Length: 230
Image (cartoon, rainbow, N blue to C red):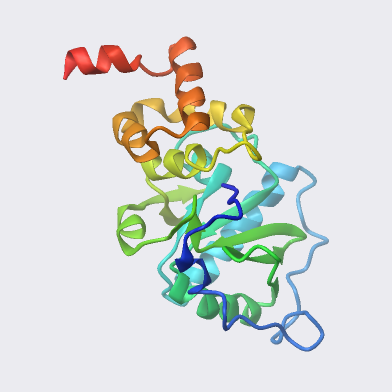
C-alpha cells in the first residue's frame, strides 16, 4: 500500500495513541483462524484474508474501505496481488477496529510507523491504514467508496480516483515503485479522474514523472491535450 515518509501531517497521531496489545502480544479473544485449509495460491490466500477482515468490520458496523492491490482487483484489475490486504479507517476509529480484529481472533500489533496498525489473518499481512499519503483518511473518502464484490463478499472499496491518488501521491525519492502502480493505472484508467489527481499532486516531481510515463505509454492524454480540450 501507499508508503509514507517521515514528514507526515501532525494529524497522524490522532488514531494511534490508545492502541494496545494483549500482554503476550497476541489476540485477547479466541484462537486465530485455522490455517490448514488455506489455498496454496498466494493471491487466493490474500483474498481469503481480505474477505475475513472485511466481514468482521462489516459485522461490527465500522466505516472502512478496502484499499491497495485488492481494491484494484475488485475494480477489475489484475489478480496479481501485492503482498498484503489494506483497509482504510478514520484515525479516531483505529482503536475500535483493532479491538474488533482481536475479538475476531486475529493478532494485532502496532508497528513503528504511526500511520497504520497491522494484523495477521490466515498468515497474511493486513494493514489497517488511517493516513494515506500524509493525509488522514476522511469521512468524505469513505463515503465515496463503492460497495463491490470481493471474491463473493461485498464490502466498501476505495473509489478508483481515490485509490490511484493514494498510490501516486505517495511517490517520493525514497519510495518510487512505478512498476507496482502502472498495471493498476492501466486497468482503471477509464474510471479515474486524472485531472483531479494531477491537481492534488501539484508540482511534486515523482508523481509528475509517473504522469509523463503514463502519457508516453498512451495510458492518459498529455496535459497539453487536456488543456486544449477543456
